[in-house]
Amino acid sequence: MRLIERTLLDLSVLALIALGLVIFANVVMRAVLGSSVPDAIILVRELMVAAIILPMAAATAARSHVAVTFLSDRMPVRMRSRLIVLGHVIGLLALIPLIYASWRVTGQAWRSGEFYYGDLNLPRWPGIALFLIGLALMWVRLAILLVGDVAQLRRGDILHDADGNEVN
Image (cartoon, rainbow, N blue to C red; front, side, top):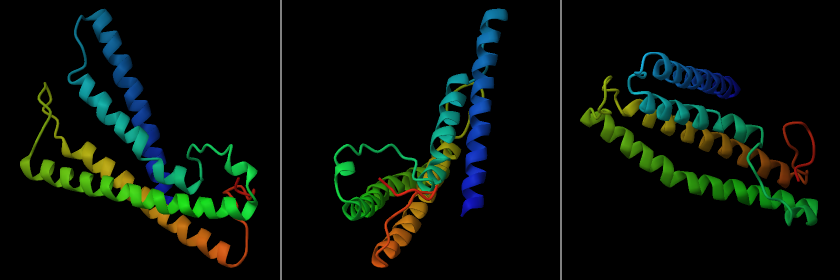
């Protein structure tokens, strides 16, 4: 799983570099030639999806999601650990409708051959499929964390983050 997460993280970095290059080329072409990169807005939108969604599984594995803990930090460590597990369960349940919807939209875009109207007539399905893949892998990683964290709690252990620190 780590290899997949690392690959997706690397792909998101490439998407960010491509995003910067498209924007840079578009600005230069507008200033110098008075034209623009064909379908620049579509390219930027699709690259942003890749840059944001692909590293989600790695962020989940590193327990790096944004969390507001000003209340839970005042609770006992065991209670915080249980809240983390509850957060995993809620996250898994919240992702199911998103995964289902993106699965349906991906299939529909694939079957219909939908594309973005523009100079390049880019197909719609790759961006939607990337979104689906990112969400599905995040769900899998969250499920793996849930199983591991529940096993730790049953052993009476306190949950730790990727660096070995107690999870707050």
